[in-house]
Structures are given as structure tokens and as C-alpha cells.
Length: 546
Image 1 (cartoon, rainbow, N blue to C red):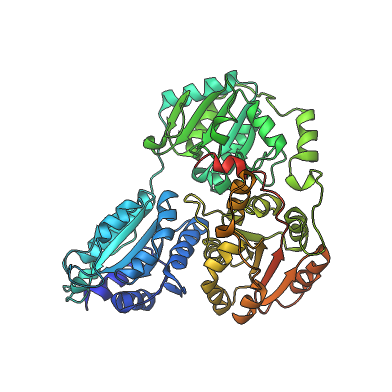
Image 2 (cartoon, rainbow, N blue to C red):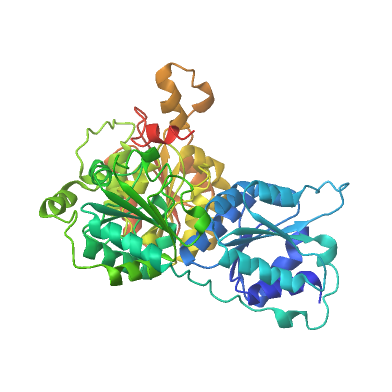
């Protein structure tokens, strides 16, 4: 057995069940060994898409996924997706073939590439240690919640594995939950008992049913209103006191209630500039607490009143047990009435600016929310449009929304929806893209069709990089570099085997209704020609972070 085969089999034994990638000569035998061992391999049309598919799959499934790439250009093509995964602390293993001779045309410093974007570089160094090193990569990805770049030199891959090499291949133990310190639990309990207007903001570290249940029980006891960061949207979907998303996407009512809190507790949430609107959602006298099982994350983005190192669920359960009595907090009849009437963006009045040629993105999004089945998983790209699908399309729970925007790259949305769809095959996948991101990732329309995914791809098409148009246009700058002639994206999709419809008015969405009611034998692309009269509500806030 060659090392390439031994490593492939060891990775599967260590828990890698799903692999995405583009296969070349350097990762051919490794990838085939993974498949032979029982892993599922999905061939993407571009390595950048493969990396983001793996990222999204890992986020939604809660497992460690892998992406397999060729040496040199295979890795460089994947770097944007790897950067997004690394910034989001996604447990992911990047399997990269590697040449070690500087004279090779494929040679680049792959360790430096990985480290530059926040991934953890590792390497298979010898036949005798290959299996152990592969299993260590999976363990580090899982236990440290990191994206690990495992470099596989070609000469080591081609060497003979020692007899019995696979005997040491085994899945790592589950990631241990961090028990909070009793004094920190007591301090948080005191703050909650003193608070009259507490708000909880749950982030990525709370995205589990157990953590949700613990937070909801504690919030009910102390009268807190629960909200989420964007990446945890849907966590409190069925809770009548939910504020939905905190930050730039927050509705006016949600922003008002969060801004009026006297205590904000971030649960597995960094409370960064997006989630707290650069601190504008934190009142002058508001106490701020952050709970995270990684001590280095505490206070990384803002000054804290208290930092608690601990697992979200365990910390919430301990505080609940110690909390004395019950508080009404913000859970008043007036708050309940307001939340029912005007929390959702779709319930707020607006002037429809649509014409005969272009549809208002709010009208489009509200109509799609009504037409598409409620059991859905939504993947969203970046751009001026992104707040509309993010906030107007409801999702059933935290697995219904996948938001790969830690790096703010356009072009990741379609791959995000593919990875999420494979993690939740029981739901209708919806990809929400701008025209720029749709064309940037169009190659993987083929992957959607080839996999037989019953996906709806919605393109908010304003024939421009809309964020730049609305950011720079009001100051009189020339916009030639960010505006484009009309593109028939529906025709592009038909070429890949999609059904497609061009939408200019609400009436054109009848074709979407028919597709939903029909056999859904081919994926559907909606080329929505949206108005471009103004920037989205969250855009000004977003550009303050640049």
C-alpha cells in the first residue's frame, strides 16, 4: 500500500465522510482511496467552490469535512474559500498535494499560504508517521475548531506505507465541553439578577438544540429577549420573544430593544462590529458579558464587564440553577404586541419602487418567502442585495441559514448553498446571489445540475456591483468600472440544464409557483431584474467597517 492510499483510508477512519474537490495528478490516488474507504466525493468545477462547499457542509452538518486539491494552482484557486473557513473557525481539513522542489512550476510556499489566511499548516513528513499525522489533522480541526491545511508531498505519497500502518487510524474523541469557573458563573448570575432589561445574543457557539434549549430556559427565567448574530439566524425561530438578528440586519424594533438593554450577554458570539453596529447597539451604561469556551476570544472586539470561559450550554445551565426567582425583564405585554406587529422586515410598510422593467427586491423577497416551502436551507452571497434574502426569507432553525461572509467575498453563495443542501437533503436549497457573485461562481451551476439538487437559485440582478454603485455614486464618482451591460443569466442557466425564468414584476413569479408545485426535475434559476435606485439599508453600516 502506498502512503497516498493509507492516508486516504486513515482520514475516513478518523471521521471524514464528505470530501469536495477538483482532482489532478497530485491528489488523484488520495481522493480515490477516500472514496474506496467509503467517503462521498463531490467534484466541483472550481477549487474555490469546492472549499466553500466543504465549509458550508461542515457548518450545517456539525462534522469535519475535507476539500482535496492539486498541488500549487489547485491550492491557490481554493484560497478565498479557505480564508472564509479559517476566519469562521470552521472544522475543515484541506488536503493539498505538494511539490517540494523549488524548480518545479507547481512550487509555492504552501505553509505560508495557509498561515497567511489563518489556516493551520501541517505536513505529512514520512511514510512511518503519515497515518498518525493525518489523524492528528482531523483531531486538531475538530478540537480546536480550525481549518487545517494538510500538505502531502508527492514523494511521500508515492512511498510504501509500513505494514500495519492503518492500525493506529481511529476517530478522535468528541471535543470536550469546557466547564465554566464557579466564580464566573456566580458573577454572571448576579448581573442577570440585577438586570431589568437583559438581552441575549447567541452566536456560532450556540448553534445546537441543546444550547438553544438552555438559553431559552434561562432567558425565560430572567426576562431576557433572545437574538442571534447573522451566522446563527433561525436559532430562536419559534420563540415569540425572539429579536431575530442583532446588528446591521436588525429591524428598527430589534435595534431599539437591543440598544435599550441594560445588560447584553453574548453567548458563543464575538459581539463584533457587525453584530453590535460598531458599538452603537450598546448603551452608555450597558453591562456587556461574553461567554465563550475559548479564552482568547473574550474581549477580542470590545471591552467587557465580564468574560466567562465555558461551554454555552453548560454555562447557561449552571446560571439557571443558581438564579433566584423569576424576572419579567423586557417580556411585557407591550413588548409582545410590538414584536408580533413589527419585528419582521416584511411587516414594515414601504414604498414599492418597482417598474414595468424592474422589481423591488423587497417585493421579490416577500413573494418568494410566501411561495417557497418553509422547510428550506438558504445560502446567501455578498453584495448590496444580501440583506433582502437574509432578512425577508424566513428559516426554520439554525440549520436553515448558511452565511459564509466572515471574509465578505462575493462569489461564494452558490457553493455555500450546495454544501448546505448536501448536509440537509430533506430541505429545499435556496441560493440567493447578486449578478456579480452569480457570474463569478457560475461554473458550479453544473455541479447543482449534475448532483440533481432541486435548488432554487435567485439572482438579484442590477447589472452592477451594487454596493460600490451606491457607496460611491452619491459623491459623483464615475461608475464605469462597476456597471455592466445587461446579461441574460437565465439563458446562462438553461445552458447548464436549469429551468429558468426572468422576473421583472410580481406576476412573473407565477413560473416559480408552477415549479414548486411540479416535479422539480431540474433546478430553477430566477433572474430577477431588481431596481437599483438606492443602497440597501445595511450598506452604510457595512462600509463603516472598511
